[in-house]
Amino acid sequence: MTKARGSLTVRRRKMSSTEDLDYPQLLFQYNNGFLVSKIMFTACELGVFDLLLESEGPLSSDAIAERLGTSASGMERLLDACVGLKLLGVEMKSEGAFYRNTELSNLYLTKSSPKSQYHNLMYYSKTVYLCWHYLTDAVRSEEEMIKFMYGLNAIWSICGRDVIGAFDLSPFTIIYDLGGCAGGLAQECISLYPNSTVTIYDLPKVVQVAKERFVPPEERRITFHEGDFFKDPIPEADLYILARILHDWADDKCMQLLAKIHKACKPGGGVLLVETLLNEDKTGPLETQLYSMNMLVQAEGKERTPAEYSKLLAAAGFREIQVKKTGKLYDAILGRK
View 1 (tube, rainbow, N blue to C red):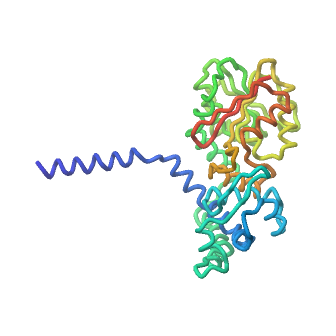
View 2: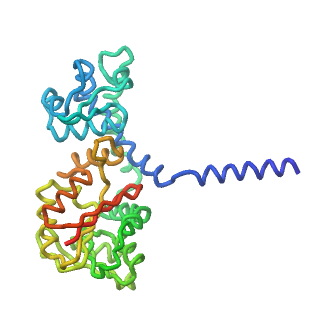
View 3: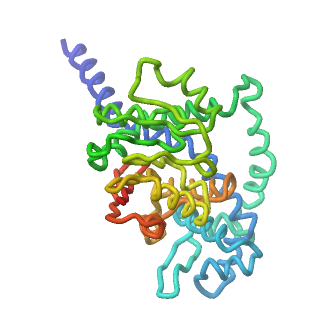
């Protein structure tokens, strides 16, 4: 009897420990692992930690960029990501942000330290990292676009309801999801708001794959519109969803698209931005800082603060701008016409 009770207690403890795990957060942590490594490698290679060790005090991002010969915007995002990784500290002054090394960086990431790991990190960055880039080639090859669509749908299966439910969207019955891809967010939308219809506006090839693989033919509340919303007309609607779209683009391109949406939007309608938001004080979140660095490598955009997105929306003519942080990976901003 005692042995049976002991076994039951062990099982309960195992179940409890499993239930306590935040599986999505754990997955995102694993997913971003190589971003963390490459940020540390890059800061080491550029000499960020060596410069700050030699300086008489904290330095601004502009000063660091000038002395290391890098772009100002790229260096600022690299430094902010290092703050999130606790490789740097930051102090906000009236002139802006000033950065300094943490003890960890002074000890292990500067070349002059007796405990320096600089050369080991450079080996991983220049040799090991490149080799691992081709790991999947030995397993199988899959079309890049389809992999992206599956990945995005997987994200919305976890985060979609949080952002679609961040505001009451029931007054908006005609909705266009610009760049809606495989339709994961559209399906969350019609699930929460059954009186609404959602049109996925995307490139013809994306629409074709979405119809064939992702959106059931019997789901008539989701329709499709083929085109390039930067170049082609945007139909009139009550609400436009831009989920992970603006972060791809520089401010001028964002303004161009938002102004075009404002012109097409019905009076009283609006636009819903779904993005991962930076803190106003540059302290994180770390995931957002990592994604901003990823935009520097892959596209021309960046992650932004709520104030920066609100400024873009206001400049395009949107008013009554509301920001809702979900506490999850993605947040929501609603602007009204």
